[in-house]
Length: 145
Image 1 (tube, rainbow, N blue to C red):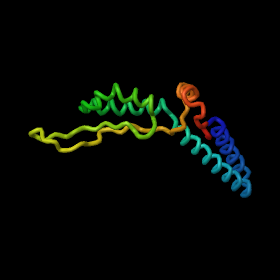
Image 2 (image 1 turned 45 degrees about the vertical axis):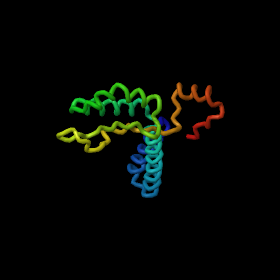
Image 3 (image 1 turned 60 degrees about the vertical axis):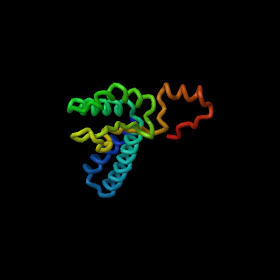
């Protein structure tokens, strides 16, 4: 990620230098280099966000807390449980919170999906999960990214 950031910063500086020279060929080349660097940076950010356990955990707990404050007793109850489950298994299929709607006379009006936890890339390797995989499955596939 740092390399992609550095490449983007240097490409931006090269474009500014090329624009200062007012040479069309240098400007076009610098713009192309900047587009390539920006694309690589966006790709790295997307890769990192698909594996950002801490950020996704924070987003989930914030969402559950906000819904609990708005009156969802289900989200209030699951706010203490679901984040722990998510940290243990942040992959597909996602954890879901369903509520059953009741009518005026307690008749069942059907189930409604209250919240669906996000999922992370299946090849995320945190320190604890990598160690567990090495111990339990010596032939576990390596992360290709």
